[in-house]
Length: 551
Image 1 (cartoon, rainbow, N blue to C red):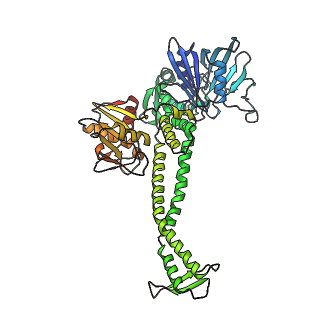
Image 2: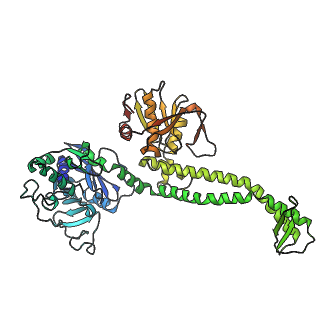
Image 3: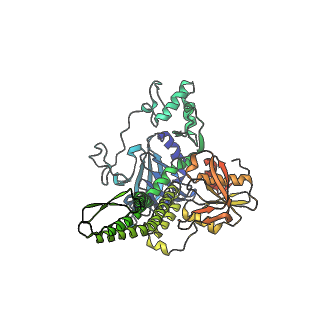
């Protein structure tokens, strides 16, 4: 993986100012990611996140707030007990390996000073976070416990002696020996990944000196991101235009979308299950209702059976009576007879069934309509969950809790003062644009926040966000940006020429018997938009956008 020893050395260099920082809160962002709140006179307050997920292991300084898990893991609880309020006295990388050691001094319950080493091992599927007692080198605990029957060479378990992984005999990257250009540098020089090896070999074969390349790498503060690769050295062998970011910011943003989705799944997995469960139940129910409705449409046949039987009460009972129809003289009816009852009782039973089916048609029509509305409602929720943040999902949880489909994890949450929905707000020139990402936000924006003369936007033929443009004289750029926002928060995000309907708020009307957020329009106009995701995402972060931006 590109997150190799040389990239880690640059990140370790950037967090060196945190030496001497005091450890405050320790939070659990996921089962494999821990967040440390650090305080120092030189750097102020910082948040250091360490992820040991097998595919996204890394460490970085957080610049944005992250929602922790409500119930921290036992490992995080142990860290709080042992090293909270302690001081980081040293930060070092073990050689050029993918291991960073944080030396920590902390006081125990009796006030005695205990020294610990927190090892962040970022080695792909073997990634781990291990707390070691410095005096005895015994493992206090580790995030992923590895018993001896899983790895006979290296035991990672409380009480075991901590040993570093075996290191093959390789050159120091700053003092390389004789390099074989026909072989991968991964096996020759410490700290290299296959991606970095290909880049070095590519440049070396073009005549660039090794010292020049390594100097560029160890002085880089930029992360170069490509479609599938990234590094703090520009990867010229890919022949692609990189997306450049500050090194620490780039590492934070690298897997942000995946991490947010994983955190939402961990915190609100019951929401996804509830929506999928209801959709599955309703999609099975609808065909049965439609079949019952179709059968009920033939209710008049049973009235005819009853009429004919009353005319032939003198006949002997048989399992099936073949009698002429009163309505079509060329038609012979085959009437099933229940042999337990007389012909008169059979006729009355058919009359009873006739009246029941006739009354049931109206009820079944209502049930089919209600079932279709519910399918549309839960389909909308499922689409909204694809682009919701953690706060938005919590609002959906409250919406489902009101319908008694899920339980609130914190019952006292019902008694708290209601907060305003977590809507998107973006300023463009003298105008404000508001967008909702779930039904509650859509309803709030359209019916509480918007004015009658404001413009309202919604993607055509899709479920999506309600977007409101508040401006006395909206410009073309403002209209196009609002339409872009409506397309972004919909299934049409990655499409082109997405049709967006827009109209005045005064032309909207709530749909009776539908869920929150469903409206109809008296009249509207349509604009076709190619969504610009980069511009929209930057505007959402900054909460503003240049009025003259070309969209």
